[in-house]
Length: 170
Image 1 (cartoon, helix red, strand yellow):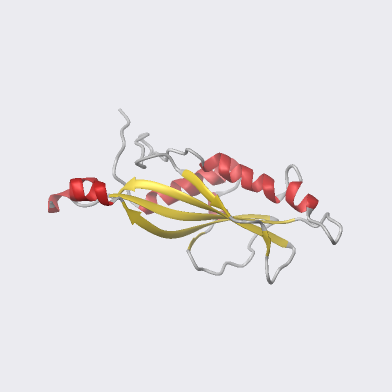
Image 2: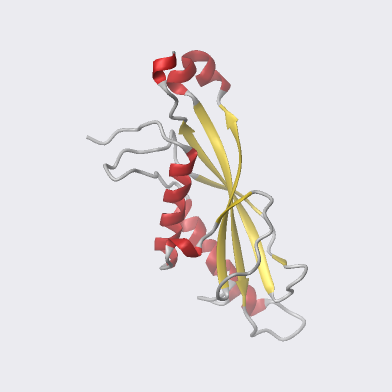
């Protein structure tokens, strides 16, 4: 019977990537996983998604109450959406932002739809998070400083989980 189990942040991030790849009909390796401050060049096509792994916060009450047995954490990741579309007149971004299938807002919608309330699970359907995944703040869509034809925005995503610690060391 499926249950909630302790997990590593890496295991959860890989499932988030696979979920995004499925939602976008892409190969998972098209979605790079990078350190939070990594500079990533534009890699492939006119739509890109990157996962930036950021820090985490401990749930002090859970850890103080249960120690290593319930080492609850909240890992933050940032999902960066990047798009390029050359259909607008020079003084506006209407199509670049709102095109139904290629626009930047459509990519944001797909990413949020894939991740909001996600319950990542392993192959045995054991849930790997201590609560649902939440898409938090979304940055403003902005043109890239060096490649002005690209627009990017970043979702802040929270992954609550119980860190898989060695319980023989209690």
